Amino acid sequence: MAEMNGLQLEVKSVDIGYGAKQVLHQAQLSIRAGGVHLLIGRNGTGKSSLLRSIAGLQSIQAGSIVLDGKNVHELSAVVRAKSLAYVASTPPRTSQLCVEEVLGLAASNAANIPRALEHFGHLSWAPRRLDTLSDGEAQRVMFARAVLQDTPWIFMDEPMAFLDVPSRKAFWNHAVEVTEQGTTIFLASHDYEQLAKSVSIASAHLIEAKGIVPLDPRESPQKWTKRMES
Image (tube, rainbow, N blue to C red; front, side, top):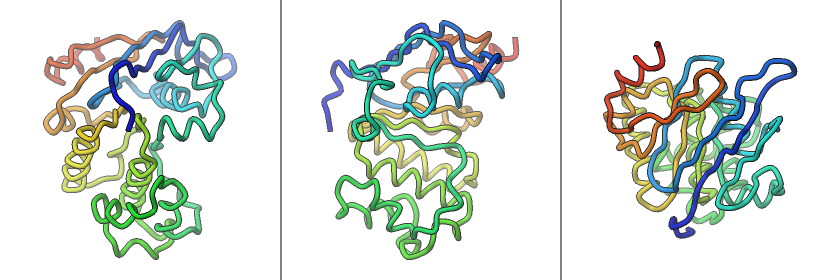
């Protein structure tokens, strides 16, 4: 894993939209590597679009997104895959690959697959097709896949959407372990009050009025909610 010193995500004067509809305008964001970073906002404000754009999966209309000194939209898919992993809000449900094959496609070291599967899910899932798992089980597999990719950054969109309470607690315990090993996690979540009880938040940001506003990560989540509702 790369050293965290000097690693940084920078969103510089970014516009994101769909046709005539613009969700972000001249958006600015800068976070340094290390720990768990949170993105919140009302539905439709552009959280998913921002994360997809950071991951290089969605184009931007203006500005630039720089990760560790490199413009993500100028990198090939192969190079991006070595720098970041992305977990979507909805796990893929059409793949006929078995879980072990799905993990193997992303793993930088295949020898780590059994341990990751046991850690984030269950070893018995290995021969099962991904489309036979529940949404919650499939989401845990996709997080294991992101971890196995062994990148400095993991970006996640509502990763707890399909998880029950025990699974959410286990998920965040594992997430903390991942960050302690040097990976930075940046995620969007509506479940941030529960998240704040389980994880020390390195930074928090709110999307509002087509911009990105920094929040005090030391404040209570209730204050973030009041800011979002104002």
